Amino acid sequence: MKVSDYIVSLLADRGVNTVFGYIGGMITHLVDSLGQSQQVRYVQTLHEQTAAIAAEGYALESGKFGVAICTSGPGVTNLITGIADAYFGSIPVLFISGQVNTYEYKYDKPVRQQGFQEMDVVSVVSPITKYSVLLDDADKVKYEFEKAIHIATHGRKGPVMIDLPMDISRAEIDVSGQRGYVPEEETLLDLDMESFRSLVESAERPMFLVGGGCQGAGVKAELDALLRQTGIPVVTSLMGRGLIDETFPHYIGMIGSYGNRSANMAVARADLLIALGSRLDTRQTGAMYQSFLRNGTVIHVDIDENELDGNRLENRVKVHADVAQFVRAMKEAHFQYRDYTEWNGWIKTIKQHFGQEAEIERFVDNKAPYRILQDLNKITRKDDIVTADIGQNQMWAAQTLQMKKGMKFVTSGGLAPMGFSLPVAIGMAFARPDKRVFCLTGDGGLNMALQSLGVIAQYGLNIKVIVLNNAALGMITQFQHLYFQDRMFGTTAEGGYINPDFAALATAFGLPYIETSGGLPDHWENADKPVLVNCLIEGRTTVSPKLEYNSPIDKPSPQLDAGEFDRFMGTRCPNS
Image (cartoon, rainbow, N blue to C red):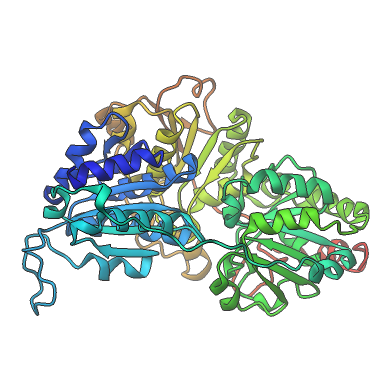
């Protein structure tokens, strides 16, 4: 059996039915094997970065691992953004790069390059992969692929890279005679739930924080059941949005630098925060991390012990465990939970006064982008997918979207590359063609990923691309307004940032096109076909609330006056 044929059969056996890539000389054997396969589809993207991020989307929606392939040299360097994003986002993706023939590879020779487009891939990607290897021995093909897939999909998930020389990819092997990879037997980490009993049972104002680590299979149902069992209120991080049933009556919102004011205020009043799969980085705690939950304790649950040990918060009880394991153990621990009626009543009041709808009406001058998201809330339904890019569009969406049962919200919060939303939507659409995907992006993100429109059009994917087009790099203009006296270098037309004609681009790619201002049009979303909706937004745009650098998490800008703040957060707070 040819090695490239074996790789395709292995992917099929693992349930992977789509591979994304860009063909080049050193990967032609694998592409040819994919092209002949009846079980695994090869999707030729128009850029390797599209392939890499689409593979992330496929992994997130399918529950399997994603696969992206490329040729040597520039193929790999174009792939790197997606590799790094998968690493920081803990997404299992198998990356396969073509490499020059082993007899052309320089190995230890003190030359920069020997073969055409040759590059030391392993050295380049090692810091942003869980495992990477130059597979230069055909007798180790089975072992290395099985090992890489296991590493990608177990523990804290993430990307792996196999650099495949061309002569190895075309070699004939007897797979039955090759040694496979036998992983070490996995053992669940010990959990002594009794050590948490007094913390949980004595807490008068407890709260759950759901982070991106809760996206694993089986966590959602368990977590939803735990929330209803305990009656404890819950917030999410940016990456935790959509990972629980947000119709839960005690769901408050998203915390962090651009979190909902109500959620940030509520966290500041909590005396116990059970953080599930969240890094608790400064985008969540604020730069004044010493004041985060200053009168309480954090039970910090994470599968990655390095994240627990490397965090700067001192008021934590570290729990090295899989989130699903911890949630199940907490359900079975039979803790004596208090009556949280008063606590949840105060939270309900905070949500009414400082929820996002109130925030928009009170503090946002240019409401146009928020109105678009409010319109989208009227359109979305159970099981829809919403992807968001990076920038103001991301935070408008994260602050405002109402996630109905079964909906998913997908964005990047680690590497956070502009141009993320379109390719990740492609991967999710291939994984679940029966679902509607609403792809939110800014004009800046669209410019970064224009080639993805060609893939969407070619395959007729059910992706509704919504461009929040303020003709600016809005997140940076907000920064320039605050700190650089409105010197808008590189972010507006006056500073050198110019958009193309998006209508002409849609025509060029063969996509239906709608241009609108003031909100989303009526009855545009029902057809199961792609569309590009260009929402024109006039004037300067802002994200509100926004936590400034030298402020505690419960005092985002625009700040409440002292009297109003004290009225809700001071001595009248229940159980204070």
